Length: 282
Image (cartoon, rainbow, N blue to C red):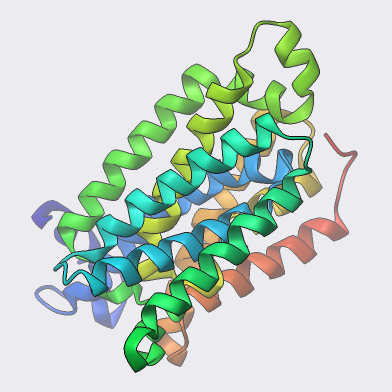
C-alpha cells in the first residue's frame, strides 16, 4: 500500500497530501478495482437480459447477513456470500429444469430472499434500522485487506473472460445454438451466476444495496449505444465504469453525497450522452 500512497501523493488534491486522508486513498484504489469488475459483468448481464438478477442477489445477501448477525458471527458478510452462491446455484438449476421465463424465476427468488431477510432482521421485535447502512453503503470504510480480496476476484473474472467469453456470449445470445455446439449451458450459466453473486455480495457493503443493480446495468447499457463489436462493447463498458467510479467518488467527496448514488448518476449521464450518439446495435 505504501507504493500506492506514494503515487496518490502526486495528485493535485488536498486529500492526496502525504500522510493524510488514507480513507480516500483506499477508496480510490477500491474504485479502480471494483469498477472494472462491474464493467465486465455488466456486458453479460445486459446481453443475457438478466438486469434484475443482481437485485435479487442483493436481497439474498441481505438475508445472509441477517442470518449471520442472528448467529452472532463477527463477520456476517461471509454468511451472505455463501447464501448468495447457494441462491445462484438454485436459480441456475430451476431456470434450466423448468419452462419458466428468467424474469419469473428471478422474481420468485428475489421476493423470497427479501421476505426472509426482513423476517430474520425483525425477529423478536428487533429493529431493521441496524441494517440501514447496507442500503446506502460506505466506500470510505474499505480496508486494504478487502481491496486485496477484490483484486483477486478481479483477476479471476479476467481469466474467466479470457477462457470462457465465447461460451458466455453464445449462451446469452442463442442458447439453442450454444447447446448444439456442445456448450454445457448449465455449467456456463452457473459459473457466471456464482461470479456475479460473489461480486455483488462483497461490494454491497461499500456500494449499497439500493445502487448495486444500477452499477451492473448502466455500464453495459451505455456501451451498447456506441459499440459495433464485442471488443468495443467490453472496452467501453469497463472504461465507462472506471470513469464514472472516479468521477462519482470525487463528486461525493466535494459535495458530501453518497458515493454509490453519485457513481450511478454519472453512469446515467454517460448513458444519455452515448444514447445521443448511438450507432447500429450489436
